[in-house]
Image 1 (cartoon, rainbow, N blue to C red):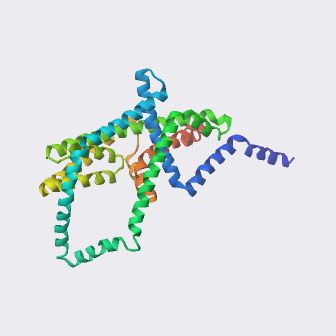
Image 2 (image 1 turned 180 degrees about the vertical axis):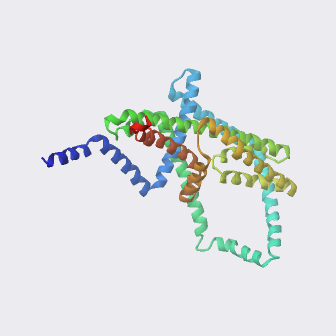
Image 3 (image 1 turned 90 degrees about the horizontal axis):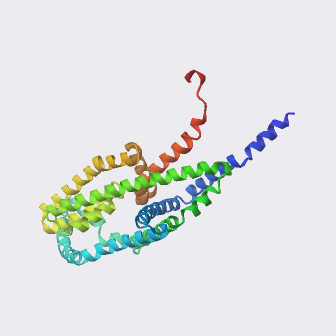
Amino acid sequence: MTTEPVRRQSRDLLRPRPVSVVVFAALVTLILLIAPDVLLVIFAGLLFGVFFSGGGTWIADRLGIGRGWGIGLFILLVVLALSGVVLAFAPLAVDQFEQLSEQVPEAFGQIRDRLQEYSWGEKLLDRVTPGALMDGGGGTAAGAVSTTFGALGNFVIMLFIGLYVALAPQTYCKGLLALLAPSLRNDGAAILRKATDTLGDWLVAQLMAMTIVGVLTWLGLWLIGVPLAPILGLLAALLAFIPNLGPIIAAVPAVLLGLSEGSSTALMVIGVYIAVQTLESYVITPLIQQNRVSLPPALIIGSQLLLGILFGLLGLALATPLAALSLTLVREIYVARFLENEPEPSHLR
């Protein structure tokens, strides 16, 4: 008599439904512990997949062609657009950077002469000499090269993951849902659709914000007479994907080009980037994201800080979409399907 409840409890624990959830969670946790960077690369590839799928589906619906052909045409249009920008501005860019190669060393020479007037400046210059940077048999240079090739390799992997997921999303969805018990697969499919919609909404909002940043930067630099204003605007739009750090990286070549026109122009360039970044951070992105994806600002900042410290630039770039996805999963799995299943106390009914 006493063993029957124990046997019943053992059978309950071995039912496919709870076991599948535990196995799925354990698998994700194991990957997080062993190779968290791999999950970031896969997630970035999924974002590319959402981008390719959304653009390709839109074209396919408008032209009445197959979805695969629409994705291929969309990728071709993106490649042609980027190639056209490069070909259109490459000659002018070469001329401008040739001038920079002559003027920037002179500007750095003046800065070095001023720093040498102070004792702390001499110590700083001793630390940043080519010999110090190459200390250890060129380890710094080799590290930079290996990091660059690693980043390029990861980018290629992201593109291929995005392409494969965009062309055959059902294959990967079925494989993922197969890890769950049959009774959970309908809920799992609904959660996957919700997660995909969230990433799509965030991506549309981000692309809108990036476009506005690029246009405003281009107009501001054009008004103050900075060369290559269109290509600098495009660079600002692309790097706006990386929060906080991206605008700083985008401003560096613009400031250098401004220096070629004079120190006053360089200061105006800095003012343009500060104005656009302030407008983007406090007006453009909050308004767009509020309509598309409801993300608390504190959650965005906290996720950027945490992932930036843990995983560097890639973690910082993916912090916001990961926060949006995590919030959706918590809402759909933990709140809607776990907490809300508990009956309310009788005195609250």
